[in-house]
Amino acid sequence: MATKNENAYIEASNGSQRDNGSNIGCCGYILYALSIIMIGLTLPFSLCLCMKVVQEYERAVIFRLGRLLSGGAKGPGLFFIIPCMDQYTKVDMRTVSFDVPPQEVLTKDSVTVAVDAVVYYRVQNATMSITNVEDSNRSTRLLSATTLRNVLGTKNLAEILSERESISHLMQTSLDEATDPWGVKVERVEVKDVRLPVQLQRAMAAEAEATREARAKVIAAEGEQKASRALKEAADVLSESPAALQLRYLQTLNTISAEKNSTIIFPLPIDLLQSFVKKEQKTAF
View (cartoon, rainbow, N blue to C red):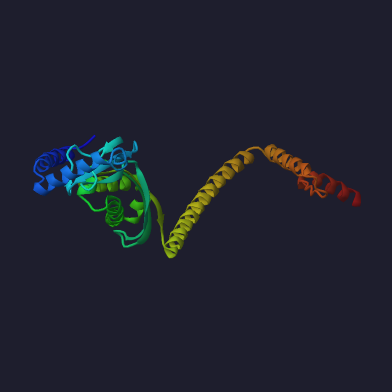
């Protein structure tokens, strides 16, 4: 749907075209009469020059003796022109996508990054795209590159890396407002890639690595603290019952035997050997 500015422009241009069409001058009337006579005399061969066709996605903007023809753009389908008087230009109304070349941008925090983007736009008003700008496609491309640098110059590096969606929306709004007088509608803008300098990548990687190492040390210290508390509680429980220590010892032996070791050290409590020591002493006397 056309905006209010576009409708006002079309109405104003149509009004001036009606006035100009009715006052083309004496030479214009003479040339018009001669053209009609020549078309009539050379029928049906003259139809090859008078009949033109534009596709469904195209519109034809016609100028008669240098003046914009009333009625707006023609098409799609068949339309007629008068040779020697009319000139027409085809305008493609389909959506066009193009890559914005990588732009070296200095961010707000003084970091140089290379950013590229993709812009999708289409011609919304064929008449305005021809009469208001020399080359709407080239102008839109140049404006996109400039807008990308201007928008990213007001952002920090962290914002560029994390807020791509908001940056794309801001670029689309800025481009749409600037290209509205050209009859161009910017439909979508996407920031495609952000390339950082190699030295900055190394610095960020070192910072991230140091952060992870510090976090790992903190986690390991917390684990050791919890383990020491658990061992202390276990020692307190075992100290309350001597038989529990012996059961724990037997459980440890069971675990060792399950690993198929060939040598097992089996320590014996000294209390068990005291009775044998006393018997040997008695026999010696």
